[in-house]
Amino acid sequence: MSGMTVAYSAEGVEFVGTVFAPAGSGPAPGVLVAHESPGITEHTLAAARKLAELGFVALATDYQGGGQVVTDREEMMRRYAWFMADPGHIRARLEAALDALKAQPRVDPARLAAVGYCYGGTAVLELARGGADLRAVVGFHSGLGTARPQDAAAIRGKVLVHIGADDPVIPPDQRAAFEREMTAAGVDWWMVTYGRTGHSFTNPEADGWGMPGFAYSAESDRRSWASTVELFGEVGLA
Image (cartoon, rainbow, N blue to C red; front, side, top):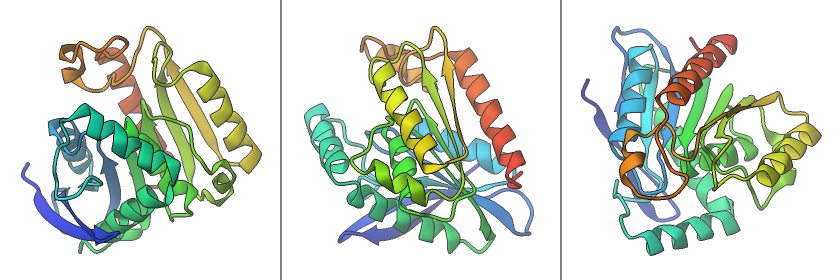
């Protein structure tokens, strides 16, 4: 399945995403797919293609700019710190992506969701905290921290996060803080914790990175995808 490039802008930066549409011609729900920290890779595109095969218009969402993939780890971490210090930046970028998704001719703007991987999961959670009209938000091995936990009161849809029990990036205290944040805000949320599972467990390339605690898990990948599809059915997207 081939995608179509889509350009959009925010904060004076142009972004280039890739949209995949399902077979047929009628209206369809739309899903943002936010990439892991480096940028849109085959991992992101594969997730968007799978969603299109299930009947969604899926936008593989660029938030780095120009569709680039950042390979320098120091630069990647600098950008990560910048996003985390002020969530307004990533919210603005994801809001522009959501507008680009809604502008696609087959998208039903009343049926929207967002999924994200690693920092992309953090990004879609921030989009939800910003009050975006999303029926569901899903994070896969997503960082759960935020500089504005009080904004969770603005979340409008259901929230699901998939976390590896052995993930060194998302320790138990961060999971506990997220639980308190969501509960205090009255969000309909749940967290699935996968045993014997580390970070980036949905990405088959993770085994080759040589990073302790980062590993692909076929079982956790399959289970997390199945429960995400189930959630989409529950909220009327599938």
